[in-house]
Amino acid sequence: MEEIKIEDFHKVEIKIGEIKSAEKIDGSDKLLKLSVDFGEEKPRQVLSGIAKYVTAESLVGIKCPFITNLPLRVMMGLESQGMIMAASTEKGEFTLLKASNDIPPGTKVK
Image (spheres, rainbow, N blue to C red):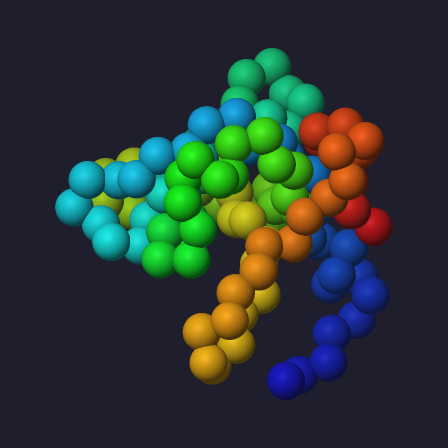
C-alpha cells in the first residue's frame, strides 16, 4: 500500500455516531440502512454492506466511528451520507470498531 502524508490523513473526517435505528433493505442480502446521530440537527442515513455479519437489531444504541466527509453515494436508490468503520479478514471474521458509550455523538476521531 502506498504511504500517505499526514496532510492526506487530516482530510478524512472521522466522527463517532450513535446508531438510532437499523433495518434491512428489501432486495439486498448485504445492505442495512442506518439512522445515525452525529450531534447534528438531524440524524444521517448511512447504508452499509454488513447485514451478513450483524443483525439490524444488534446495532441500535451502539456508537461507532464513521467517515463523514465522503460524497453522497446512492445504492439501490437510497442515499448514503457516511461510511461505518469495520474490520474483516479473508476468512470472514468481522468486527465493528466501537466507541465507549461515554463519548458523545459527533466527537471527532484524531
